[in-house]
Amino acid sequence: MKAMILAAGKGTRVRPITHTTPKPMIPILQKPVMEFLLELLREHGFNEIMVNVSHLSEEIENYFRDGQRFDVQIAYSFEGRISDGELIGEAMGSAGGLKKIQDFQAFFDDTFVVLCGDALIDLDLTEAVRRHREKGAMASLITKRVPRDQVSSYGVVVTDEAGRVLSFQEKPSVEEAASDMINTGIYIFEPAVLDFIPSGEPFDIAADLFPRLVESGAPFYALPMEFEWVDIGKVPDYWQAIRSVLQGDVRQVQIPGKEVRPGIYAGLNVAADWDKIHVKGPIFVGGMTRIENGVTIIGPAMIGPSCHICEGATIDNSIIFDYSRIGAGVQLVEKLVYGRYCVDRNGDHFDLQEAALDWLITDARRQDVGTPSPQQKAMAELLGTDLAASGAP
Image 1 (cartoon, rainbow, N blue to C red):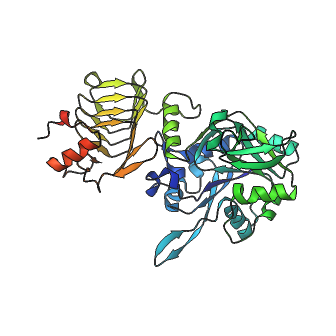
Image 2: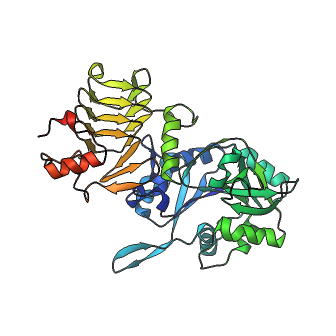
Image 3: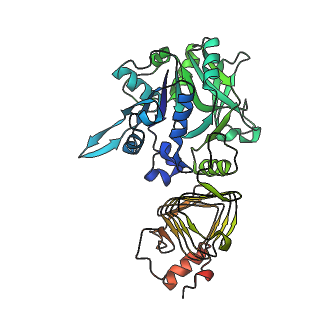
């Protein structure tokens, strides 16, 4: 069976991570989110998978290649061009990407599934396809019920009693929402749906294709299903995804490494004297990371591989990406550290290098980190960083 993974978006709502990492490659405890999607598709017999790519396409293609090591077949549809020797991404939109593939060669010749490349899902795709065919649908979207006070974060789907889609509401207020069933970005299509998509122009599934299907009276249904769905479309979503995984709430993601203490998981060759570190799980620490004595780590927290956490630092409900050096005495509470950026859980971030704070939080591979100047210390204190324990003059 055939499937499509949508992987061409720029991921603007997950910046700064997506400056250098495309959304499908964002790691969930060191494993790209798209890899979990491939495992799900393979489990349900979908072994011919097309992926549209654009932004940082080489990162995706170089990792997954032709899919052999994942026991599937993968091919890529690049959306963009080369200008002055530079690869320029020009995404066609989710529906436009489907049409581009079909215009190239009629790949979609039977019922196929479309998944967004930025969500962890644990859906019975076999049952979803069965229901789709049972209804005689041309198009189906998988919906999920959410608490009423959360509807304003999603696209709401309105149906009749038979489940036929009547209309959509994009992030309505709680008072205006006509339903508590939301669009999960998981679709099942028949090839005939591609006739509703124009060739050679950007076109979106939810915003453009679905209204056409409703207007035309096509057999278009919502399939409400109960399943695990962890969206990582925004920084707060990613934050919650990592917390959920560490707390054991996501079935398909196992915490890697060795459990060195209850709730404390460490990768290969972590340098840490756990008797001299104040730690409260759940936490995961990647391989070849050094944690000095006197560090405090409060979970849920993730520290990536090859990091260096200096004496007296505090990592509290925070996510630290690989090769990060957290200076002595630095306190990180509900922060995400990614390269030169420090991000709060709402997605607001600042550039440590531009702020002249890269002596405080920087790349662990650097060897030129000096003593902070009085001006740097003052700036750090304004940001709420406690340098008292660092011993810096």
